Length: 550
Image 1: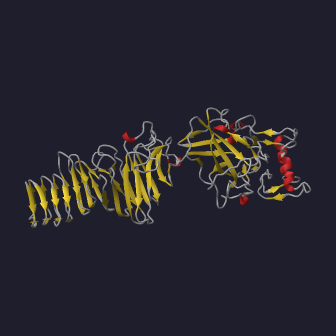
Image 2: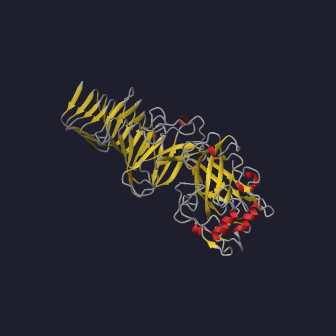
């Protein structure tokens, strides 16, 4: 039986009225459902071309609901098929209140805007490639891991969202799995925010991207975007379920990774214990084509391999202050690959690390090389996997070019054990004597605590009691400090100041400035020549000191 109405149905309640249709209802006229009134349709309901459906009460549909014309009003629509799933097409019009009371799910077949609330008393709302638009005042009731919004290939758009308190969106990527609610709050300017989900973390943060298997992350990806590019300030909380975790995922050491600038970025410093499977990220001011995922300290989402290293140079070391002087801070070249630093022989470094103004406590550039080997003896140059230029600070810490961040080796992995080599333009290279270990995703190593922290025999010099550093004086960077003999470093100091004027210092940034005070001195106070002699041993000026790096 098919009932078609081409005239208005006006339901005017006295206190409460329930009008029930036992067959399909097709409206092509004007259908008005008044306040405190319920229209119940036991089959499908359609508002066809030319029809006007104005709902101020409650419409209960036990089949599919299709709007091909005009729907409005502040009433509720209850999808209530208790035997199978149903579909909902609103033609882009607004539902004030949507109640999902079916046994399986309601599937969108067109975009819809829900103005007031979504109530889950039965199954899911499946977006199925369509858009669910919501205001920043939207309310959700009775949602759970089995009653929620399944984004599937669809998306949610938070319209003009500036809710500073926050709203939890009960979303998942599958009807029976993957419940991954997202709480979003905005303390800045309003914007339209798009949210999508997928059940895997891809290399390029797109649904069509490659999936690299991993047991150290949550197999869920939250993809977001803005529309107006306003000055918003977002706080997000991501939640997940145990069955979405990789087999070795560690909830005691996990964090939120962000995909931006073409790569995944999980800062080891953001790793935290999350026994309740909930993590937050605050102060987000850019989500244009941004994605988020959850990984642990062993995850491939970690921002490369991050190292916190400490080393001292003999040249500028100051025993009074127990740190290094930064006398040449103002003349350090802004680019590590400059020919006066590491761009020329023997280093021929081509990296892009640079700064505009040297950080206040920067001493000089150093090169840090990462090697991957089964043992320190096997960690030869052939095992090198990457090299980065970094800034050595007065306290011995090695930082990125900003002088703040720990150094990171991007896009590399370790198959055996990691060893680090430290190079400076006028000191002997050193390498860690043991494999560098990590905790919480951060690899740490301190060369300064013992001579044996550097691989080899007496590979470091004693600076003061209990403190060790790199030998100074390898002016030509050939791996040896030579006072008298072939390839003499002493002679290079003399040549730099001028053989005819050995008592006249020269100023500037130079490898011949072995003590790194900004002056090249052959004879006189703070002589760089004497430092070379001290490093090889005053009693054995003809015996070179050689580096110990394999």
